[in-house]
Length: 124
Image (cartoon, rainbow, N blue to C red):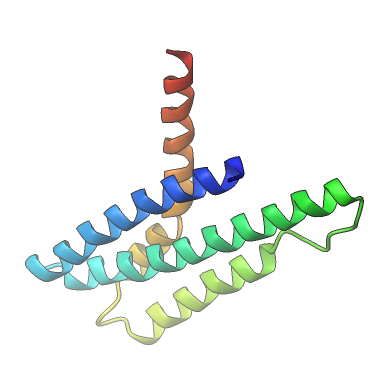
């Protein structure tokens, strides 16, 4: 398995753990709109992470074969973020907008934390 897929698998586990905490927060706290926004944003963030891994893997294969690659899918990730914000604006009673935006950033935060943990682990 390629290194990027191993990293993706590890980061996906972290995101699923966070999603389970958010669902518990939604079910057992009075801040349901905040946690529902985090669930929506983090779910779409996981989808964006999957897109990024898939495009990066295809990009690496194309470089090895000497082919050209169009892009790494930035537009589709931005469109997903815009969709999340539109949903939050459509249902402001149920979804907290700032929570949706924070949820969208979750995969990038998880990537950074995972990088620091792995670099500390490799130095030992």
